[in-house]
Image (cartoon, rainbow, N blue to C red):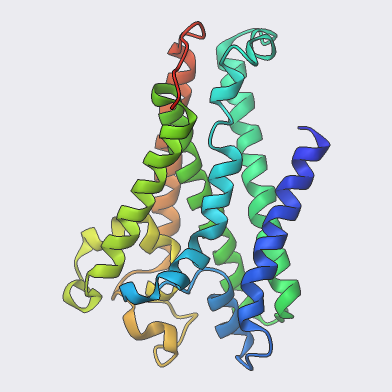
Length: 259
């Protein structure tokens, strides 16, 4: 992994975190409330708050821009010599998946740590620390989910189209969340399968966040963090498995026409 690439993974999320943190400077909120809103508790079920939605999703969108063709570019003609140096495609695929996990970890950790620093959040409080840890797990998971989807699409339609498709999926899932009245399906299990809902802390029915706090106005009953973490884990394993199979079977001589 090149040093310049590592710097990009650190300073870009740092800059995003800084911009988002400006909205919460001197807010007077307690650390627990502040931690939720600074990271991924900003989406609320009202389409008029699209600005808040974009702020919440911005680290995911930027990460997709950075890594959306990570696997594809190593198997096209521009990087074919890097690819053929590996003894087998199995080794290549496993190595790149591990590196992709590392890249996602660095980016997500940089965003979270920067948010803690810029907002002076006290992480020594047990509840605050646990909420921030969950924030990291959710960001790490959803970054992998959309980045891998974009990488998979890039093998079939090229970089530009794959970005449009993955962002369209993100927009669809977000709109589904925004336009539906959560009170209509508090106990409807399928409502918990939207990754955007799993990513959003304020929808979870959790003992970490009191029901009288402002973000709990729209929580889904029985929707806990353990479910979302396990669900993301299953999604990530499936997505990486699909990507692994594509890498093994992909013909590197194919030229993908991009718009």
